[in-house]
Image: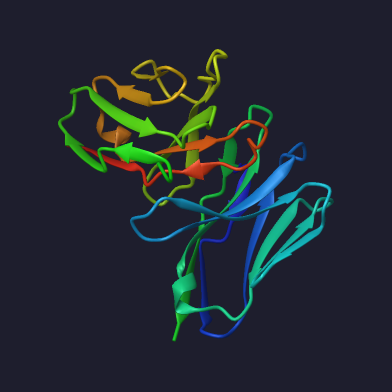
Length: 110
Length: 114
């Protein structure tokens, strides 16, 4: 099965909160990441969390990590149309390369 | 430069031809990574360079793929005898010493093999 799993699609209304979920199987990761990819663009690092933390907040973004369940989530408060993009969950491996999920497409409706 | 740059941004080639993709990492970044993103998929690790150490090539899908990094800076990914299944976006990333957890990505090269 997939090492990192994400749901494919999420649709929210502008102003609502968005929650994008991710599950992973490798418990040896040091860092877990959220990347954003807008159409035709490269990946933008949004935020990351160290594996011994359970929450990190950065302005409108809140990352929650449940190591026991191997579950990572990204909450975007007051979602805007500019937040429409594909969001990738990733974690590092022993060799420093990242393993990515297949991405969640967030659609924000006005 | 301000960020990771890649060239060309788009490449269309015929099956069987060789292609070279270039990556210029952020100045001072010692680690460089190549990933491949196929349509509708996440990113797949290809190869990792760290300073002068031997590269980690464990992600290369076949011996048609190779990469070099000259002078610890610019890297070239070469695909020989391209196949249609090589069509993808090839992304390069770099990170600085002591902060390898933060990888900065370039815009990618979109490769289409006809």
